[in-house]
Image (tube, rainbow, N blue to C red; front, side):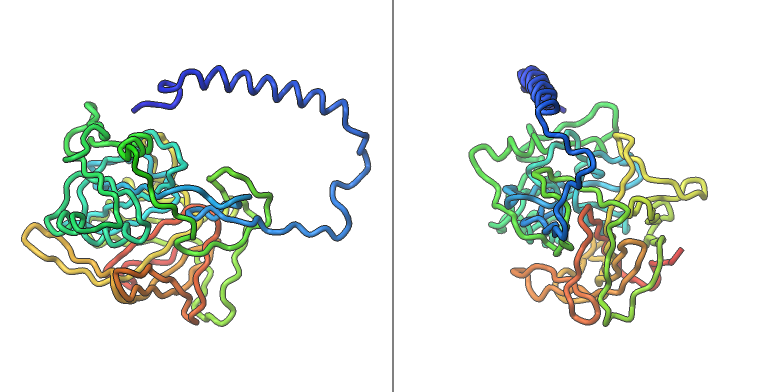
Length: 373
């Protein structure tokens, strides 16, 4: 994969000269400031207001509206594909079974990110297209089922980037076996647009809680240990459940434990290895941590002898939300293809997320899949 430094080597010189200038200015400013020893840095009764804007994928506080589009990538998650690349950088991941109930991932990125390797890239499925459609996004994949390719051919809301037609924006790595060796990057997919621009995505897919920290133009945010959630007071289905085990409807290798850390207020994704729960590591040796985990129940049926599935995306159903060591029952609904999925607590109030990354998992049956730990 190309990197920005390799492609734009003059950035190195500019970065060094800028750093020297900043350090020199800091030294001058240090000796020109008045003596403030013993003085407070804020005035009495000063109120720190929430940032005026939030990043639509992470809830990060911003001084101005985010100017970005959405790039999505269909990522394989069979054990032959491990370790995955780039998943740890995705602000949103949607995980749904494919054939044989083997999990597959839709990685959702902002066009303002730099992610040099994403994959392995695999084929499209119609139910993932229904999720992509809600973002008016670019969708990178390698082929697809007949129904998925038919849906993409008539969809005017999605920028289709099929490796079969845009192969120059994908790379097959020689140290991995096919078909588990196809990768791409945000840079490649952005280049694939040419003169075309991505639709602007400004409103969060799911609302975030307001943040009172100083606004920044930086996208990533890692909630601190002091971040708290206040569940709906009229919802009786809130329980303290720091960890949650998800029994996957196929091989036990795909079982998941979301391990909660009160220190970071994050959940770490773990899988069983030799009977021991072990943190999942990506190709960059990074762990997968998120602030929010959503598990949804949807009807699934096997369609053909290949094992392709139909997965309910229009309608309504039950779900679970993990946040800050708490587990809450929620509901999802999507009346039609032209509307977005809505998430509410059982009392009808809209679900709000803690700023940070979110992982959504869709399963055929919640009671038989979830185990409090």
